[in-house]
Image 1 (cartoon, rainbow, N blue to C red):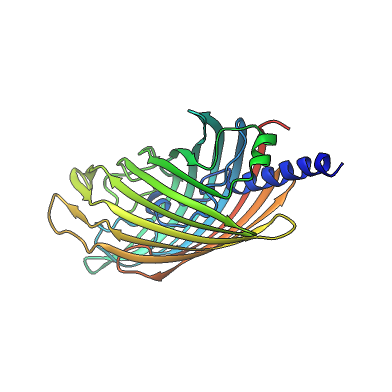
Image 2 (cartoon, rainbow, N blue to C red; image 1 turned 180 degrees about the vertical axis):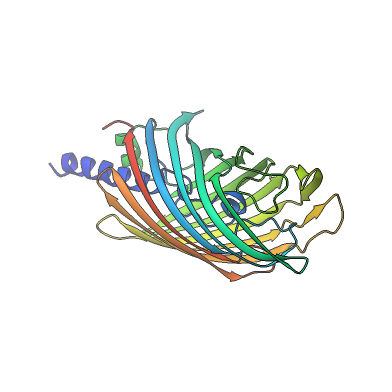
Length: 315
């Protein structure tokens, strides 16, 4: 009798774990901030055929949505973002895989100083959508819900590729925009290990940027690759909710206009805290991120509130 009762409990626990990780950065901020914040529990495996959808709200304040090529001093901005996201888990060559889509809509107001003259900018519209594909190549074979619950993996490793598509609102005569008018590619490699109720995670990513050839009426904006490292420690409580502490260190990413006047490379660190509360087939997630040290960009605070729902994947 105990073995019969245990399986549904394991499946419910697995579904709750998926709900927490079903979507990528569901409240992510468009533009520069998409690449800057922390993301715990990404490598949580899920049954083949399971789907996740969610709505997120984010409020960011500070020097946010600013490319480092823009010569604005004392930037201060407030940005409200609503994001819709979808994720699906599937099998690929016998390995658990996932595909994600995120579409952000934002409104923001900025003040700053350009060449000694005060400047103000307001914008409302869509940011760049983000798509991502990932495969978990260690510890997470493509399985149904009962089989995955019985496997109970301790260590999972995975590889993902995130692409930011330049479809967001962009005005070539404006310094500050919601879209970037350039493609961004980010491969990421990570490993997660569960020790009791703790999950330890390490990730390494590279952000690669194409040129924006229509920056301020036809100038070319270029940016060197940006390297980002993330570390997370999360704890799962008995009732299924979990709390995570995160840190993110970034290096490089120096930018230039028309091949000259290269800006200072990044050497920044951000800290984050995330709380996820499962409610049946739904999850409420709250997060806060803030800069610990800032050499260029990244000097902003962000609060997230996300609702997520999961379905499919078997019993």
